[in-house]
Image 1 (cartoon, helix red, strand yellow):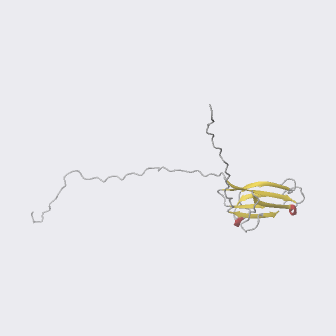
Image 2 (tube, one colour):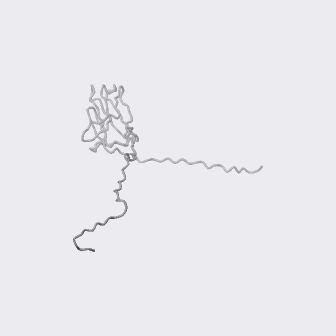
Image 3 (cartoon, helix red, strand yellow):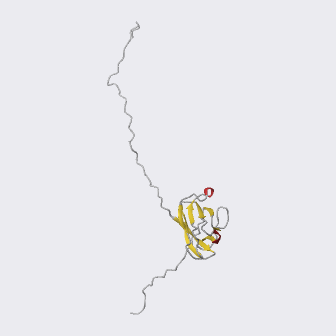
Length: 172
């Protein structure tokens, strides 16, 4: 090596390395899209018994079964509605649904509100209770709320299955 202030240039043989390109991400990744359903699936049904003390129907009073919230009673979507056109008593089935937790039951006044009464019971005649713990019964111009409607325990019916005959019959 010379020490007289000369500079030595060192070269590397071969091509100059080029930067490698990063892999590109796919433009669209596969995905699964589930469409929301608006179909209501019945969870349990109850019996609404409407009564009129003068036996002439509810005289333009109507009942409404709505999805609701106990804090905003009466403001949900109507799931079922009706009236009693004539008579002293009538029943109708109202149902709870798997995707709804709270319900409001609302009755309007009609022409003669003092004649109107109603009660909601299980299909087996057991009392239903509101979110306030009161029995689900009342009169005209009332709104009551239910949350977490009870679901009855499943009942099972066992039927004996006849044993197939063996086909052995003696003689011949």
